[in-house]
Amino acid sequence: MYTFIAEEQATPTNTEDPWSVAEMCRTLEVSRSGYYDWVDRTPSEREVTDRMLEVEIEAIWECSGRTYGVPRITAWLHKQGFAVSAKRVARLMGRNGWEGETGRRKVRTTIVDRGAQAASDHVKRDFNPTEPNQTWCGDITYLRTAEGWLFLATVIDLFSRRVIG
Image (tube, rainbow, N blue to C red; front, side, top):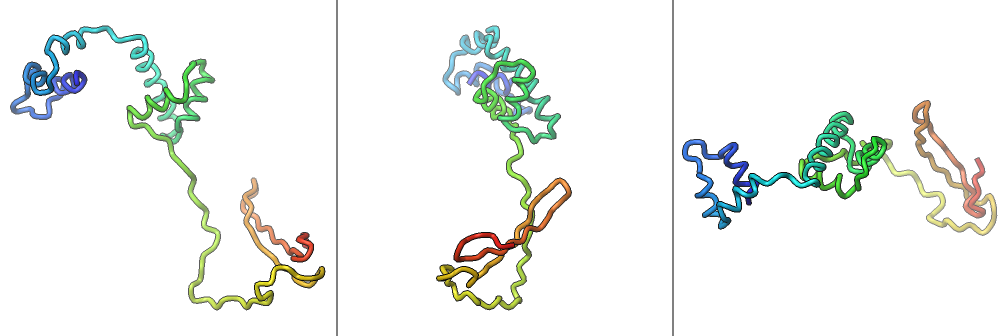
């Protein structure tokens, strides 16, 4: 409550007719003396440390292009010598509305042609042949490498489940 009163006094939402401290304390049912005690109180050690950490966290978050989340920022703070938990970093980031980027952009590898005719089913959904080399199947997948995307094609004997080629 006291924080709200202090913020309202600093930048009133109603600039034409701002409320006095006494009016706000009466409306919020808090004592005026309690508010002034809160204003004059020196910040606790935790508040001071939190403010210092917020400056560090914001700097790291901005340097990362606003992509780093709690785990990376916590690791970065540990490298800089700060003894801080991930929960504390999460609390401070949440309080300030700082969020890391989540997930990665999915690479679209298959573009479906709705008008294409379906392939014929030569296996007739029987994936348990009675002898080797009776039924083979294949598959293609993409692999990301340092050189770029590569294709991997395999042929498998369904009886032995071994890769033939």
